[in-house]
Picture 1 (tube, rainbow, N blue to C red):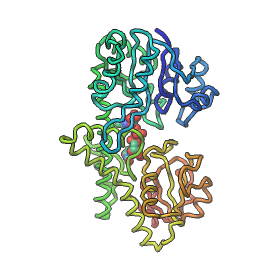
Picture 2: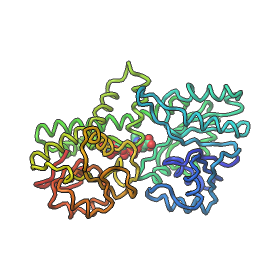
Picture 3: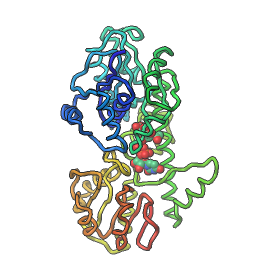
Picture 4: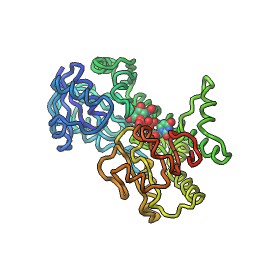
Length: 409
Ligand code: SAJ
């Protein structure tokens, strides 16, 4: 077998490539983003993630290479972004189609092309096969297609890469087994093989399940607020039941996965979806709900000056530096729309200023903000709880002990 070419070195491609390389596979990672490739070639990581530096060092020792151009080989794993089109809610397949097309320009005859990026069910049939066939390739002979969706959770990627179970969908059991052999180099979990469409569907369904469960928790938070009840206590009690496992309410569902994938099902099955769409709407409505809660807390405490208000946390969840689809960004968009200016924003994980009002100095943020809305439960805040004691707080992540001036979701 030739080198394993990882195409797309983002949040999934990079750790995956490093993991393969650290486990004895000859890997080259490719990305069109020249500065990203140069950073990696200069032995610097492009994002922060627990355990990634160690893995990077090991992969470098094992000889991983990074390239701006695709090389000729007989095996590729594609890990490029797959967003959705805002209006239609259907997948934007152009990046993945373009990556496959570029692979066809260079690959060896009989090459195996595995797509790891999340794709909506039927994407390979609808968008990839036609491109391959138009180019004169016979699928199953000149080229083999497969889908091996990733499942790793930002914040615990390295552990989950090694320990999660995986799914591999291919046109034939032989190709599925061949790919399984590659992943077995590091994956300690079960590796289940199936057809391509089931693999596509399983990934989207897993993230949709979580979205629906979070929406349920968010709806409970609203019910409890109306009843003056503590939603966290309620969920804690309900979860003592052996078959109940409710997730946690929060300011909204961000990230590039859970807030995106259910839309694929909404876009493709508009006449069938009910729960899936309702859950999306509940979760997408949470930033507005938090703004509403902020308004009533400000009124209750006679706060009229927005520059006395601080939003803690810009990332989509705790202890990551990823801002994609973050609830805080969604709230800031709303403020912009209504010409609300001057709110303070702080996030210890975001070292460059990305939004108006962002402050890099934590002490300055604390000093300016009489009312703090905790939107992300970073470890940083847990380590600095003492500075919050005289503040009015809306804690949307349930990380602060209940107190006189602490409001919960
Ligand atoms: N959230 C809540 N309440 C919860 C859990 C999460 O409000 O109880 C929020 C988070 O704050 C965040 C969003 O949901 O804004 C998503 O966070 P997450 O930690 O649930 O998931 P992601 O997006 O980081 O990663 C998910 C994972 N999918 C599942 O757990 C089913 C991961 O395993 C996938 O690999 C990843 O999506 C992906 O790439 O698809």
